[in-house]
Length: 337
Image (tube, rainbow, N blue to C red; front, side, top):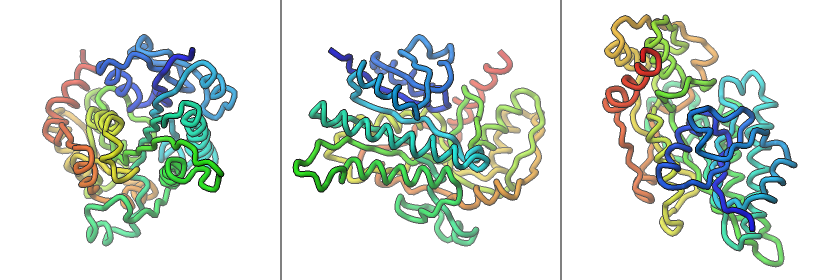
């Protein structure tokens, strides 16, 4: 008999490592993780790790033959900045990889006679404001507004949201017998800031990059203007959002895709907080025109009223607590002992 498990892809990334620890703390011991890289020492003992590529169909077939997959947290992705340099590879990983997993989850749902729960993290990159005036005039956007992304990553995420909705509501809709659909749920994140993992290619990473550079005593030239503003969230809240959405009763959910957010800051305000924590920090501003354009296309804030209404979403870390209790002390310990 196959062992029932929770599958987490992209586990080596910022969200993945924190998610594994969170699920284990909640008593979920049957975790199988998948990444193209080896599992970090910090989480290697917490799951059965498989090193491989989500585009490898034979690997997915092996997973299905060995395990009954009840829940999938699909975190594997090629992020925004890197995706602009390798858009074809980004599409392969972000879209084709997601499509393969959705197809597998749909088939498993039918086999199990019970929906596979598919949790998908999306991004503020799914939005595209045409100019700064629109960003000012529409400061707090809803899930269905301004979905005109200007990056390959944003296009990929938005399309995968739609694919998830298709597989959970319309898959095989013309078949003689209606199949059991998978249960697709998506969280659309703002910029995420982690104290424990180094930023890895996101266009919102100027925030955490300031912190990590300051803690190491290194100068940092911020690649956006001082007035650039987007919403952010501390990593513990991001993981809580994923897990809480996964645990929410299906009957209470009125959407498949939900915004979540915590606080919005300008780059100058982030610098002030970093300098407050690290008085010797050397942070200057040297905007990169192309990356600045991407940040300008993202809204200044996200409207997460639906998440608060449907599954009681509420961030635990506001800006003060994020910096005072989570980011600063943990980053200090990371680099200074």
